[in-house]
Length: 199
Image 1 (cartoon, rainbow, N blue to C red):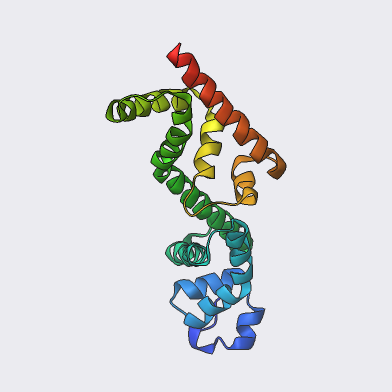
Image 2 (image 1 turned 135 degrees about the vertical axis):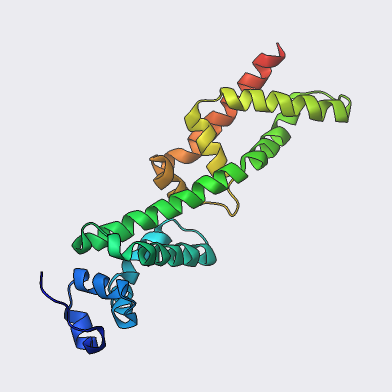
């Protein structure tokens, strides 16, 4: 293995010419100039992937910061340094998807609240407190009986802040143009399940 030059000799020209393996090795040795070289080489890639999920700017910036933090933690353990672009891309996508999953979990209650409001139109006037309790249970039962794909789609559509259709399409593997019609079908199925439960 070739011996790396001392960290202090790494000038800007050398940074530009260095291999990714060399930069990672130097960055692992706390060479700020090498680290800056890695960031400069790959930051456009990371930002591009993060922005493709169309989160708001603070969330996107947090994703990018987390990706660089993950690299700093694993700097000396990258199996194939010359494929660092692929590693960064995968890490960035995983972090974006992790945010979507967390928001999906948080918005479950919001989903049920919104569906609850729509479902109220199916019932006559009854005691409000009793209705709220019964309706919540009914919505939960009906929602749990929906196909998993419908549950996932309705949760994503209720994310806060909202996700646009392009992001939802990327997360679900659906065509953008199918999301609206599929949403309508899922809500229709939910209403059917609730009406059936009342029979």
